[in-house]
Length: 67
Image (cartoon, rainbow, N blue to C red; front, side, top):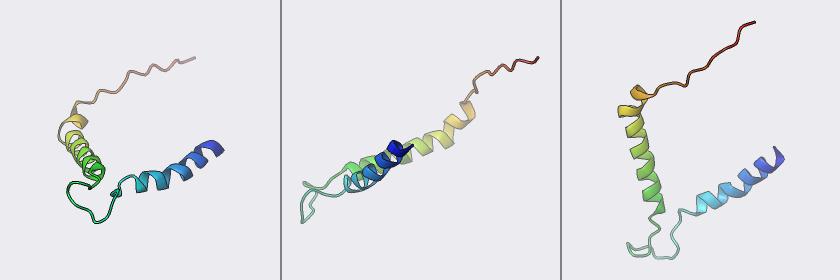
C-alpha cells in the first residue's frame, strides 16, 4: 500500500505537467496537443459507452457452490 501511495504522489504532478506546452509563447506549432488528444479520447469513450456499449455488455457467468 505504501508503494502505491508513493507512486500516486509521484505521478500526480508528472501527469498534470505533461499537458503543459514546452515553450512560450505558445503557437500552433509548439503547442502540446496531448491535452486535446486526451480530452478527445475521453469524449469518444464516454459517447461510445453511453450510446452503444452499456446496452451490449454481457456479465460473466458466476457459479456459486452450495453445500
